[in-house]
Length: 496
Image (cartoon, rainbow, N blue to C red; front, side, top):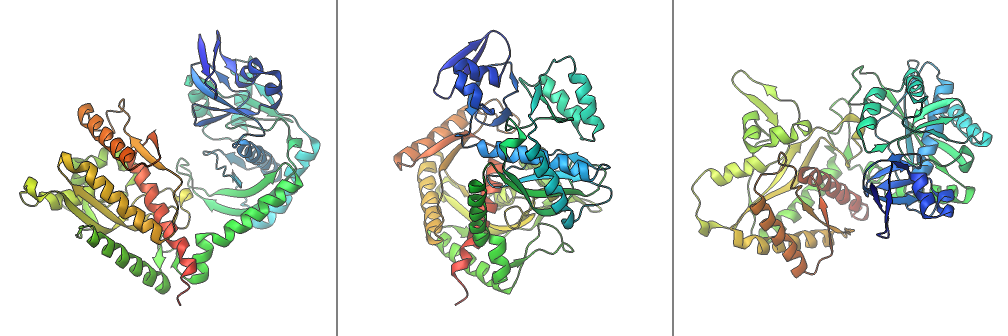
């Protein structure tokens, strides 16, 4: 018996695996008519042809849903890929994780002959001709007698990693369908509009080249950016929104004000702070150090490298090795660029014997750190490989945790207010009790620490959301976002 929990809390029971579309029909015939996909367990978006075989939460996607735009963009991505295959028959699509933002989509393609910006016009014309012809998307469900043949055809068309994805599909409780449109077969990885005629128009806007991490050939993969909508009115609104975004884009502002520069000869993701940017960065750093002084932080400085043994002892080597640069082999030791300052600051704490009376002890450092990010993910200051950030560690007695948390929160609030940075919500990131590899195996310690953090949030009357999250990933993204937001605020300084 499979139990499907709906958005309103209602639970539907089924004796056998069911497609999303069939589940929608069991709720209401009108819902089946408008259903284009669903969100499974609040995270995975699937087309309405996906088959569910285990208990899960399900949220139906219709035109009124906030994620309807991802279906528009995914449909446009598919048609653009077909157009690319038409223009470059010797080429083939690459299928990394779908890059579907609220505003645009991206199609990835390899072509031995290369793709030029001038080719986008022809590709766009062919993609839009598919819209005019009004092809329906037809689903073939897992277990269909012809599915094996369809899989062979998908592989023959050049889609890489098909075997891996099909194998994963066979083991997952969500079975993604094979889709046929016109005479083309592909694996659906997102919600789709019911027909190509559901779109109004596709416009291709940009062409870039990158190297995908799982591609051993080392060849360039072309990334074609585009926008699409279901009506002329909505397309014009989208263009207006994009113009506003461009005007406040940190890359656009930084270029006009000569803040930073990215030189491929020096290295991707390694920002160079130009004179204007260096002045602003130093002023921001000065302000932050003054704030840290007000909150009784002690400034320290640690090396930009450390031995691999240091990170093996700290646990970073086993758990976060994929985010670190390759080690540098020396005659008698192995060194690594510093990805975070935790073990270095613990070394400062350990260099002499401490008393409980010394606590709390607050260390702060404006540390230069290096983290390995894939080439395709590097974007301005949103994702970089070298960054300088305020990195602090506070050593406290157990009965001081709540007070120190409140102090830190107030410090952060003051800094954000100074730069007029608004936050959407607070996230109380909890460890996954089942994950004994990523988190220290001491449930009593974790339960006590998490309970205290939640208590202080309630005492401070702060709204927050609970979530299971990898702390390192969260910190890494918050760090880059804060640096990005600081740069975005530079537009009002204007060097008066």
